[in-house]
Amino acid sequence: MRDTPRMSPESARVAPFGTTIFTEISRLAVRLGAVNLGQGFPDFDGPDAVKQAAIDAIRGGLNQYGPTTGSQALRQAVAEHAQRFYGQTIDPETQVTVTSGATEGIFDAVMGLVNPGDEVVLFEPFYDSYLASVTMAGGVPRFVQLRAPVEPSGAWWFDEAELRAAFSDKTKLCIVNTPHNPTGKLFTRAELELLHALVRERGAVLLSDEVYEHLVYGPGVHLRPATLAPEQTLTLSSGGKSFSFTGWKIGWALGPAPLVRAIQKAHQWVTFAVAHPFQVAIAAALRLPDAYFTQYVAEYRRKRDLLADGLRQAGFEPLIPHGSYFVMARTDRHRRPDEDDVAFCRRLIEQAGVAAIPPSVFFRPETAPSMHGLARFAFCKTDPVLDEGVSRLSRWAAR
Ligand SMILES: Cc1ncc(COP(=O)(O)O)c(C=O)c1O
Image (cartoon, helix red, strand yellow):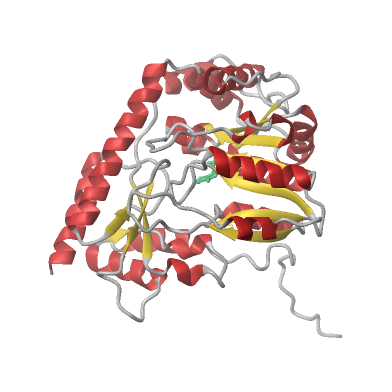
């Protein structure tokens, strides 16, 4: 009998993916009872009225597959929200498709638009699913680095020549994320116009991930890239961050009908349809009055300042985010010369009892060292958790 060669059961497509640092940090944080300022999701729920809408939808019998493009109620609400906040006119029948969170939207867009060998321009630091999706599609990533501001309240920036060099005849897609995780950057009009010009020159598509669209503190505003060049832009968003229901995984894509159709074609074989009652509830959330959105951002601004002040008192140098719910902070005063950001964050959990994310995970190995002097802290946490986090950091720094 011949020996069967021992082979990995994994496809070459997924074999390169390891366990993410997020999993490792969270495990360590739980094991050591650390305050978790690493995880990028709220430790509180969204509005009761939205929960009630989900309960009513379940009791009302919306418990079977919904339409593959998404429930009519949610598509209509997405179109109304786009008109209300951005002045966009969107046809809910042909220009919106609902996905399982923005994460599925990213995967579907890449699968629906990128052929093997096509190039995809990514800004790094990048939300990790961009690179995973591009890799699975056989696309070739081209990177442009966002660089930290010198002044703590300044804007992250990129080099125009580097951006131009990232585009080629093979560019099919460029992914932009504004407000940006993890830097909190708001892309400016001039930056977006440059991006659009390069995308247009190559006949490519701009995919804009706007899951933090309502978390904007300024200076600057959130400019939706699609409002500048609607014909070449797909917008993704979701109800996770805006309404504090990340576990519901309700997202959507909107844009020109042919581009939305490309997403829809992938979506129908990835999930086909997403949780029906939660779609109806997020439709209600998108229609909440303006007061909800103003209070929500005011509350987050207060939490941002609470965390930034606490970090400063503990000897870190927070780079004040202009959007999103993360603060990147320089760790130079505490970091040992031989430590990278991963080792520093491990030690912070062990010694201070506070978990943060090492930002090099949002970079390629070649460029990761530029992040070794930073850590990412999340402020989507209740005040007692933030207070406990900053007082632990202060006590640790004083020792
Ligand atoms: C930039 C960015 N895009 C997308 C997502 C995922 O969104 P969703 O939960 O809707 O899949 C996240 C979540 O952290 C994110 O930070």
